[in-house]
Every structure is written in structure tokens, then in C-alpha cells.
Image (cartoon, rainbow, N blue to C red; front, side):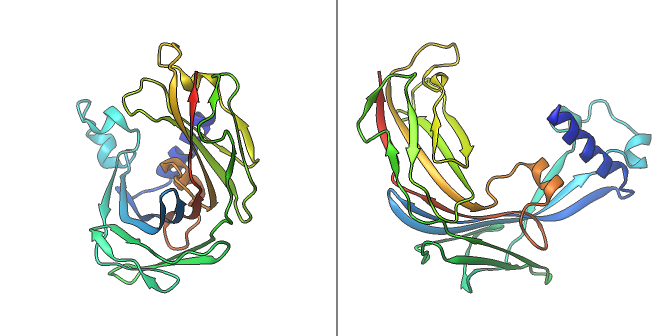
Length: 256
């Protein structure tokens, strides 16, 4: 039902538009303080999204049943990277690595400080956003090297001031493992891990080492395309998200 409602809302957007296509600037930006291994980074992806209006007269008059536009996405879109923009975080320039990709390592990041993103595109459009870096915190359960049964894994971490959400993830330490990966978002400081995380797609238990990560986030983070259409993200001047994150040292534990 939720997907259907989202579909109807986006459908209304296109039905109300008389243009052949809809274009907008899109941004995904973040600053992240990682403690295992230690690194401070700032990264920004900048592009122009163009979505074809399938309900424009041109489309309705000359439909092509074999058009691959209709095979994968209801609303086909393409992203054109925007190069040579002026991208800054707290007046510190974030250099361009590739067209549309801006990145800077070893940026100075301090817990609980405010970080302002400012982007000026080559044609003079201004995009701004801000967030606060969450405070330091740690994973307290399980402990490094613990051996647990698959139905008794509970993740617990300490509180992080200025955090709006915690992203929790578990992956097999062995990249060749057939076990499922798992991720969830929580506003509390603990969660139970589903036992199915330690199974393969057929439901068979997969023993071994697993990695637990918890990320404290302030601001927007990894929103889907529909989220951006419906909420606009948390930027001024573009669709998209800007977030500040702290990632403490992950925990490696055994499941037997």
C-alpha cells in the first residue's frame, strides 16, 4: 500500500506537468568521521536529473511497445554529472576528482560542530545545507571476539549527542560467505538482530565471523529517489541530502 501511495503521488506530479521532461539539480553530500580505521572525509555527488514525462502528448501519440524505457523503471531518468562547481564545507574547498564527484580526505572534523555545505554551479545556481557532527560513541555489545548463537545477538551502543538516527549493519567477515547481509535504522541505542541474518537464501545456518557496524547520523542520508521527489531532501536549491556521520570501530564476533 505504501508503494502504491507513493506511485500515485509521483504520477500526479507528472500528470500536472505539461513539459516533455522535468529537470532538477540533485546532490548527495556527507562528512564522515570514521574511527576504524581513522579517517575524516567530505564527499559530494552533484548532477542534473532529467526525467521524461511519459504523459506528454508526444509520448501518448506515438507509443512504442518495444521501447526499453518501460522495461525497468516507470519513470525513466538520467543523471548528467556537473563538473567544475565550487564546492565548500565550512569554507574549505572540496576538490573535484571526476566530473560530478567531489572529495577531500583528512578534512578537520570535530564532534558536535556545525558543518555548512555550499555549492555554486558553473551557471551560478547556489545550493546550501547544514548538519551537526554527532558526538563520539561506542558499540558495547557484543564485544570483540564474542561467540554467540544466531538467536541471541543483541546490538547495544552508547548514546551520541546530535544523532538523529543510528544505522546498524551486519555483514559476514568472509566476502565469499553465503550468509545474508542486514541493515536497519533505529533511534534507540539497542536492537535485536534477526536470526535470518546468519542464514543463506535457502534458510541454512551459516556459522562464522560477522562484522557489526553502527553509524550515528545527523541530517539526510541515502534517501531513495521517491523520497527525494516527495520530500525534497534537506537541501536548499536542489533535491538531495547532506548528512554528518560518526562511525566508531566495528565489532567482529563469531556465530556458532
